[in-house]
Length: 112
Image (cartoon, rainbow, N blue to C red; front, side, top):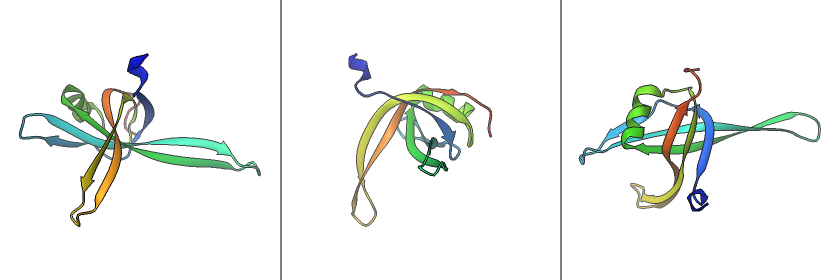
């Protein structure tokens, strides 16, 4: 059960083509976001849809797979872990973000 402490599984659609970054160290990084939807009905019976956006990163072989096989609009199933980090804006303001570090991904459909 210790492997379940920081584990995330999501199914959603890519909002844009993955951004590929080849680092000077020779490592490959891919960044993209996916949208997941939640549906429910309010008291009057109207269907309400909430869309949530999740920032995803992937490294190495997983990044290479994503670069080759995953495109904007495609539905994917992915597994990873939460990875919080902070960064500083150009104005010196400190920002915090939580990304999902993707370790496995499966395209479940063709490009929408």
